[in-house]
Amino acid sequence: MLGNFAYCNPTKLYFGEDSLQYLNTELPKYGENVVLVYGGGSIKKNGIYDEVLELLEKNGKKVAEISGVMPNPTLEKLYEGVEIARKHHADLLLAVGGGSVCDYAKAVSVSVHCAEDPWEKYYLKFEEPDCEIVPVGCVLTMVGTGSEMNAGAVITNHESKMKIGHVFADENIMPKFSILNPQYTLTLPQYQMVSGIYDIFNHICEQYFSGEDDNTSDYISEGLMRSLIHASRIANKDTQDYEARSNIMWTATWALNTLVAKAKSTDWMVHMLGQAVGAHTDATHGMTLSAVSLPYYRYIMPYGLAKFKRFAVNVWDVDADGKTDEQTAREGLAAMEAWMKELGLVMNLTELGVTEDMVEGIADSTLVLDGGYKVIEREEIVKILQESL
Ligand code: NZQ
Ligand code: ZN
Image 1 (tube, rainbow, N blue to C red):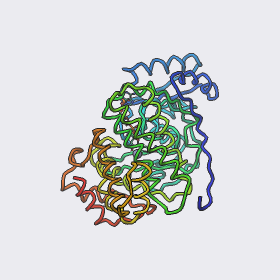
Image 2: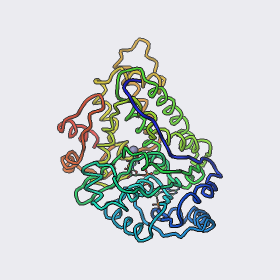
Image 3: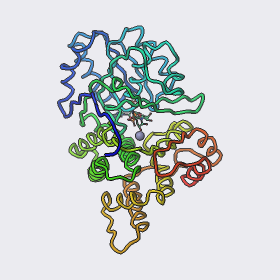
Image 4: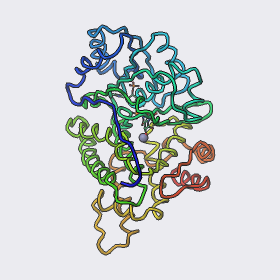
């Protein structure tokens, strides 16, 4: 473990079929004004809304609502929610939904008491909050982003065609508690389930494909990837398999709660490409990643060959005997491709509505980070996007 770091994750997790009852433990810790934050209505159809409301009432809370938080939440929606939370003098923001709802609640939490424009401050200048932060709690219904135990909040600005994620450094922005009931994820459409599975896998890849030292984080990552591949195959055949879905839910949390990033520079370029695609298409997050991943990884493979070989052997059980490192590494990516196709993931940008004439604009919206094996230039981004069509 090279370098110096601090590790603290303050989010308390409650896991399992009975975990919602722990709202009775958590709610009394906060004032009476709760803002319930949710999406387009799935929680009303599957009954989670009624269960949560009953517990809020039982705990004597005054409840206001921010409903209709859309996938890839927008800046306009953020402004709207901030007003509701201000009017209600929110003591707690309770997010009930997927990553979009949890991210959104965090973005509201740092904006309610902020005098400046949140887009400008948090998403363009990447500043940390210097105001009071409204506490956030989550009841997770869609698995993938890890938002339930991290300080990330992704907001989309359609006007400027920018989808930007701010992973706040301040651990006070992480949810105070998150309720993880795998049962709640069973009503997800299969498209969302597999998209979430790939999101998890890619979060691990983004952190794993960096650095050359011998690092415990990489061994943890390999274990998480193996568990995910195993459980995903079961869940893809039977979406109602609780055991598989519960393992996927737990893996998602550990894939992006800062643990496996420790002592790693981390890459995140698949996410930068995916977010740029999202800004132009509003496509489902995990599918934007699956569409660009293989062209990206095949492109950078020569620059991180030793790690790609290790990935092939330790994650995909490729037999390296009698093969060059490059052959082994390529077989690993081929095994990954076969698994992605087996899950039914989107494998190209065309399927997400991207056309050749959009490539330059998407390249303009792509932020370049330098933690991976190769810092890519604009022409390389264009090439990778073209190959993803
Ligand atoms: O809005 P409702 O009606 O609730 O429907 C949602 C939504 O349409 C539906 N859904 C959720 N739970 C369900 C359900 N449908 C049936 N049954 C259930 N139990 O699923 C759809 C997608 O939900 P969403 O929250 O958008 O998905 P996801 O969890 O993938 O979140 C995506 C957002 O998170 C950001 C993405 O960029 C995107 O904006 N990310 C956040 C990260 C973080 N905080 O660290 C990292 C990620 O890389 C990602 O960028
Ligand atoms: Zn992601």
